[in-house]
Length: 251
Image 1 (spheres, rainbow, N blue to C red):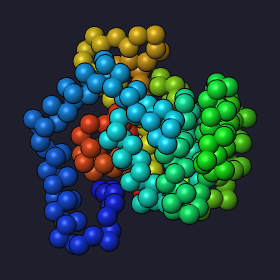
Image 2: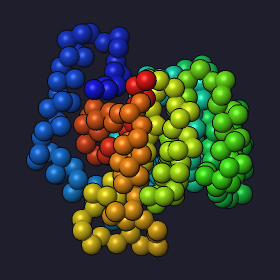
Image 3: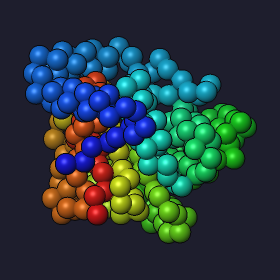
Image 4: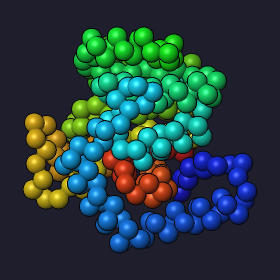
């Protein structure tokens, strides 16, 4: 099974203890239930809207930001493709780690990039590592632009975090997951929608239980054995918006 090794240079005993501890979390029913309850309250209180990365709002759980950093550092991609730009915080997170790695570009795609957000992103100190594409992430012209960009890249990583309906995420997976290189990841955010309590209403949104990123991931994986869920990431985080959403390409 996939396992993201984030500290390859640490002492072997440390790495062994860490891996065993993470594996134990997989079966820790009480800890996982507490984490899920906390996540529901965090959603209700918009907790994930409290944070920023290098000056841009980052609408992510802090634990997921840590996971993104760990994945980028481990994979060291030459290209990161992100659907869903919003305020640009996630782009800044990706670009900042690539800056330290010493190579790589980020392509951010959104159906609408508001002028004030575009201005802030394009004037940021990390703007040289970011390309913005305004358009639907599942439109053929957008997909073609990205595929042309990705075809010659050595290592490609994908983050999907735009429209969270089943059909949209399924279309994004079909469009972009195939660009992911072996050993890298396609991370699908907000799969936790499927795990919300029965009857939970997501106001003013087109998704909910039975129609969300997790249902799309489950359907897509049935015909894509080249990917597996890296549950070690979810198990180390416990509090994440992406349960079953950390997809590692294994071949």
